[in-house]
Length: 135
Image 1 (cartoon, rainbow, N blue to C red):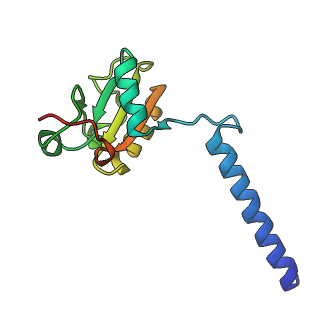
Image 2: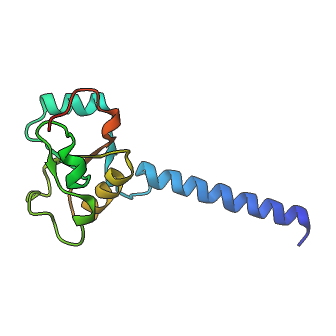
Image 3: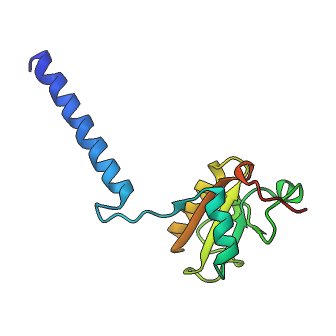
């Protein structure tokens, strides 16, 4: 195989991989997007207008104690495993998750989706939240 043929083959594989990945992420390949990432404004609007909405802080208990979104419950991400959390008894209820920076909330959203929860919204990090916190 000539060098040019090899380069063309590598480019074609890369393009095909990128297209399939993007289609899968968009849900157009029949794959389900496990959760929706939302802005602080969208989260605020949901909290004001949507009943019921369960807000879940997935940080540690210590981080929780230093300040959290009013009305949120604390379920540390490391406790979300192969069994549904007792505090989240309805798999079809809307759930909004957040953490400190966004990494753990994304992880929690994926884990909750794998457990069968169907309406998961990921706020990301609480640092994006400008609507006040409580202790």
